[in-house]
Image (cartoon, rainbow, N blue to C red; front, top):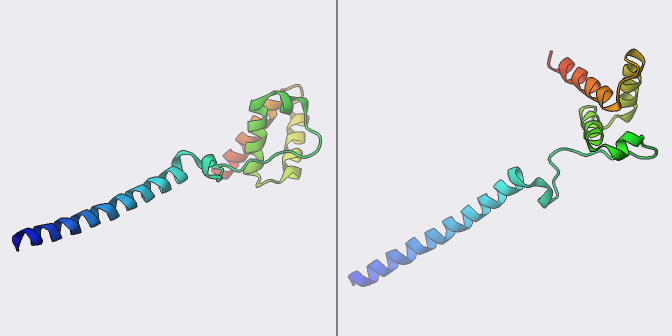
Length: 116
């Protein structure tokens, strides 16, 4: 009788351990999906805006320029008209700088103004 009782308790413990392991696997899946590799699961961590139409030569050749343009569009929620206007203003105020400098300046100004 005592052996049957021990076997019964052992079966309950094994069932609970099995359920716990399934929960841990699910939590591991959620953790990876959320924090470790978002592109693997089809959820980009930062929206990426791809330009349409003509693009500048520096955009095609310089990956940092692409990153900066994408970051600027993220800050402006995809508003390309505003991005072009801000860049045009900086080109008029500070002529002779590189494309990356103008992008960094506009991004810096936007972030500074939002944190006031």
